[in-house]
Image (cartoon, rainbow, N blue to C red; front, side, top):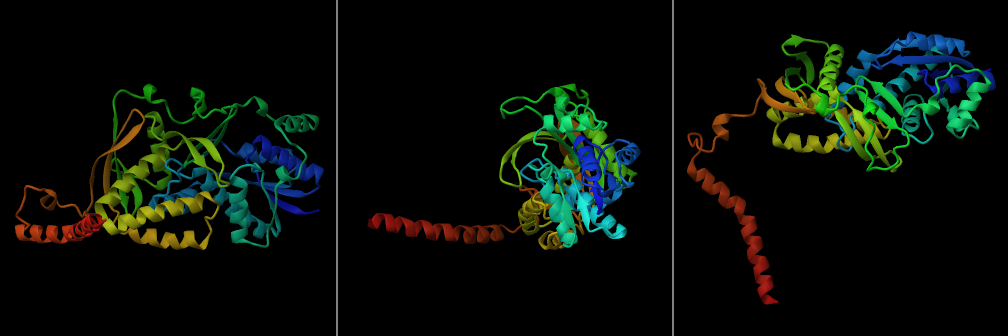
Length: 402
């Protein structure tokens, strides 16, 4: 009998996977359930795993680690995949993979398992992350081995064996939630033109249902880390939870997009990410105040690459780790405050300040010539125009000769 560590969140697929591993294949299974901010009480999930035949069940709180070691580096990198994906689901899979590897080592197991869908990104992310941390570990994915081809097959399997389930075939919306956002799968929404049902969203209000008065808030950063909200010092976990509450109340962070999945397939995705949206907006604005133009230009290029690595399952890749070094260096002067207004689905910057600000109103004011010599402007402009003038003369000569 093989001992297996199974990532178990208590959903329909994971219940089937646990039962199948224990009762159909005869494995000894230890389940691992992790709190990443789903805002649900997870102790019953551990009890459910034991009821389904698990030899042991671990339920761990990894919310602080999730934010500190995964979400915060992503924020500091400004990493957003294809406009609106703040990578919450991807980052969660890396935490789960990391904990699977750790527990497998502690328990002396050489086999881990998951219940990620066979068509999605998550199976690739999980298994790539596991291989990067321990290439000797073998991964078992029941969804790729059992002969259950559709929801009806799975439901019949569960009913025949009296597996306790909700009726998943009736669920129109599947929710993947953590502190860094919500990813929604809306069943039967096949037309990209079709509007999603209002009840699909779980943490954000529709803009027309938000308060008529805006919410003004101030976020303080120290070396790229958010440390206070409205003048009150806060640790990262309570700060993110409060921003999720406020942002959701004002409809901030809701998106309906078409993006390219890991396999290159176009996919319509629905996201809710109040806290990441607010923090990304504030953090990006503060960086613009304290960083040089050259740093910003390269940072924006590498931010896109960082997001791609995180989305594609390469969180533990040496390139992503190397990029972390670059982004850590860029955060040294990202200290200061940003004031934002939340209103009707939008979060807009209203002001910013920093002891490391590179903004000088005297230099920016075009009517103030105190710090400028007119001769400097004349010389600079002449030099700047020179290549254009030379190219234009050459091209005009070539045209006239034809």
